[in-house]
Image (cartoon, rainbow, N blue to C red; front, side):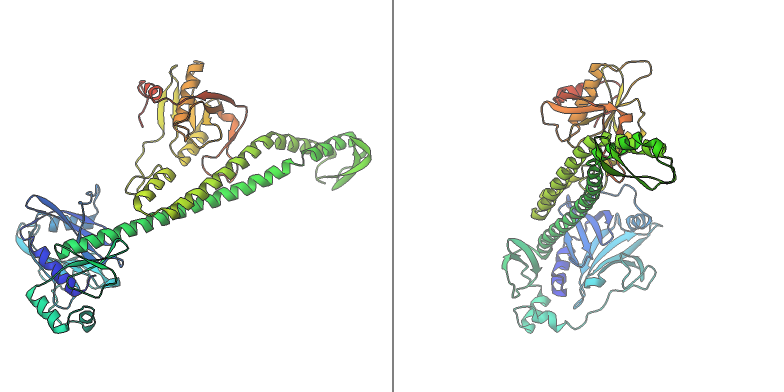
Length: 512
C-alpha cells in the first residue's frame, strides 16, 4: 500500500492543499498528526509509522488536544503551528513523502520546514528538518535530533515494485511521469484491504477513488478499526482471564474451608470426649484415645498439642468448632456466589471472542470496566459518591471494587453497611451523626442507593442486606470488594429514579 508510486500520487493530493495553515499538532508514540485548515475545512493529516499501517492519510476528525503536553510536543507546536503548506513531494523511487512548510522560528524569522514521513516498514519514522538540521525524529531509527538533514535525490525505481503492477514497466513509468494516476481501493470480504495509484493484480474487487489520499484514508480507517478491535479484544480477554483466575483461587480456598465444616460433628465429639476425661490425661500427649460420649463402647482418636495442657487442648477444639460453625452458612453462600461469578466471567469471555466490531467490544468494556472512559483511560474521580439521608446522616457509595474495598475497610465499627443480597453492587456506608439515632427512613434511603448502584437498578422489590460494619469481613485472598457478613437484616426496595433524585437534591449530596 505504501510503495513509492502510491506515495507520489498522494504527494500530488497533499500539494493541492497549498496555502493551508497548520492549526494543531498531535503526537502519539508511533504517529504524528498535523491539523490543517484550508478554505474553512479541517484536515487532520496523519503520518503513521506502525508496521501494520506505515502510511499517510486523513483522519475523520482531529484528535483532542493534550491537556498537559510534554516538552517534545510543545517544541513541535512552536515549530509547526501557524506554518503554511507550500507543497509536497515524494522522491522518485523512495518510500517517502515530504510536506513543505513555510513557518517562523522562535525569533520570528521566516524559515522552510520539511515534515517527512519515511515509510520503510519496521524502520518507518517521521522527521522534521530545517536549515540542514533535524529538529525532530519520532522514533530516531535513521536520523536523530541535530543530525544533518537533506531530502534524498531520485534513485532508480526498484524492479520489484514495477513488476507488482499490471502495466509494462515502460508504460508504468510514462504514466507516473505524466501524473496519469487512477487511484483504486481493493475490497476483500466487504473490507477496504489495499490502495494503489495504478492497476495491479489484486485478489479482491477494485473500487475507484476520487484521489489517492482519500483511497489511503479508506484503507487506514479499515485497518485502524481492525487494530482497535484486536486491542480491545486483547485487553478485555486479559482482564477477564485475570478475574477468572483470581475467582478460581478464592473458590478453591473457600471450598477447602467449607470442607472443614463438614467435620463439625466429629470436632464437637472430640471436645466433649476430652472434657469427660480431662482428669485421666497426663500433659505432653500428642493424641488420646477416649470413649465417645454418644457411644461409650466406641473409642475416638483426639489429636493434641503436646505443648498445651489437656484443658487448653479442649478449649482450642471448642474455639475452632465455634469459629467453623459461625462460618459454615456464609461459606456456602460465598461458594455459590463465586461459582456464579465464574459462570458470568466465562459468558463474558465468550462474548468477547464472538464480538465482531469495536462498538460491541466497547459496550462490553463499559459493562466489564465501568470506570473506563471511551479513550480507554481511567476517569478522574473525586472519590465515592456522598448523599444525605432524611435524618441528616451521611451515606457514602463506592463506585468500583477497589473503592468498595477501601470504603468498607475505612468505615467505623458502628457504621451501617448496605449491599444488594447475592448480587454485584456498591458498598454503601451509612455514617450516623453523633447523638442522633438512625431511623427507618434513613435505612430506606441507604437501601435505595445500594439497589440503584447495583446490577438490580431496573429491578423491583430488590433485597438489600444491612448490618453493622463490625460484622463485615473480607476473607484472606479474596478479590477487592468481596466480603462475608452476618447478623444482618433485609429490606426490600424498588430503586425509583425520582426517589434517588430527591436524595441527590438534599444539601450536601454529591451527584454522579
